[in-house]
Image (cartoon, rainbow, N blue to C red):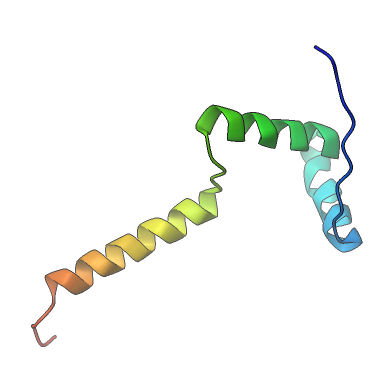
Length: 73
């Protein structure tokens, strides 16, 4: 597979924190970006675990509010 080079701008602090977080997983920044790109391609979107959890909590809250509409708790 042919490879290409990309450049990414990010805050130095974020870059350093990311590299520290990736080190125990024995990953480097390039591998992590490639993994993210493949995830986006396979899922057709970018989904993070925390985003899914936030969405689910909001959905549960709306559902609970509809259920209790008109009731005094």
